[in-house]
Length: 184
Length: 264
Image 1: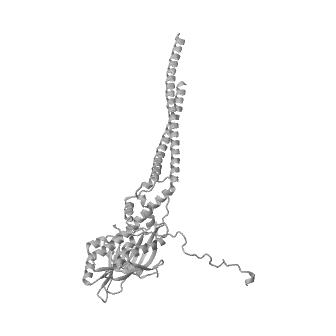
Image 2 (image 1 turned 90 degrees about the vertical axis):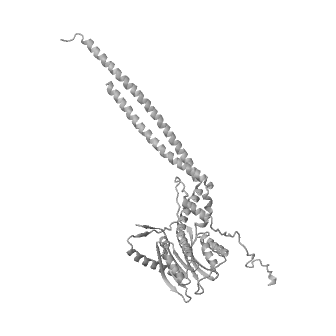
Image 3 (image 1 turned 180 degrees about the vertical axis):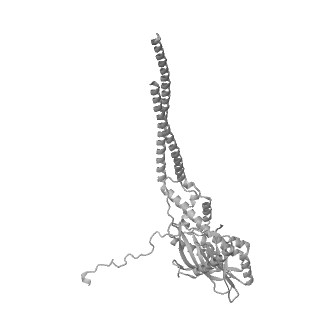
């Protein structure tokens, strides 16, 4: 049997629906408004960041102009530092040679004279000739060359061309390899 | 319907927000990167403006004299002359192209090298471990070889040999041979002559720098070099400013008195 109050029921249902829709509409409206506010805020932040970027770019151009005005000073300084680095390498090579000559000049004593030196920087070879006054001095030279101090100081130490002249002076050639070594 | 349209609005707004947030984050990252580069540029500009106050840079003239950027022939001659005068030796027979291809010193060095190599081979066979000798590179510079002969008292020649490596421009003795007059052992007061081959160094490296690259640092090794070259000897070179001498204004006798026709 049909409900006689079907209109009232229908109105009730529609009113409920309308209220539900109104609620949903309100929630959606508030949420959209919040999101729009956030969006506006983010747009504002973007504009701020873009202006910061622009300021940084301007500062960069100004600093580049300052640096360019000091071009000659920078060139002179860069060459200065490069020359120091080259000198560092050259001095390291020479130091090995000078240390070796100084070592052998002092370790043999005053009876031994270094009468010739040949030095090859590329292969780090140092060859020198020594003159010993007599056989006892020569024996001292041999002992010094075989000593632990000499062996540890130089990676390679070779004696050759031993000669004796008419006055009893002994001459010998000594070759050392300079530079650092690494064991594999 | 309302729900659908509401959801649609939310989706559109939400996706717009997401894309804007991503764009803002990208901008922020870009700002951070550019700010770091800006700080480096600011540091470089400040360093350049305060360079004169840097202690190490005060030695720039000394470094340029020790390692000039051109072949220092005149400077070398001045240095040799100055050191020879100071140490009381005479130097003669200066040569820029040292004699024969295989001079006595070169032969001496070659025989020494071959002896050392054959000795090294026999040692390597008996030695289980292999040793590697690192070579020192010579990049950034070149050298000019000069052969000369010095003579004097042995002790003074020894001092000359020691002092010649502590003068500007940078000189290294490559070979030395003492000419001993007798077969006796040399005494400090004996007259000797020494043949030397010296190398004088000059700078040849190409230097490049970008506008935005930072200034190079002066490390501890470079500080040591600066301290060492401060003790070197820097002979002065007199540069001729004007032409001296002459006084011959009329070399070809052009200012002759006029000869009249009747006088011929």
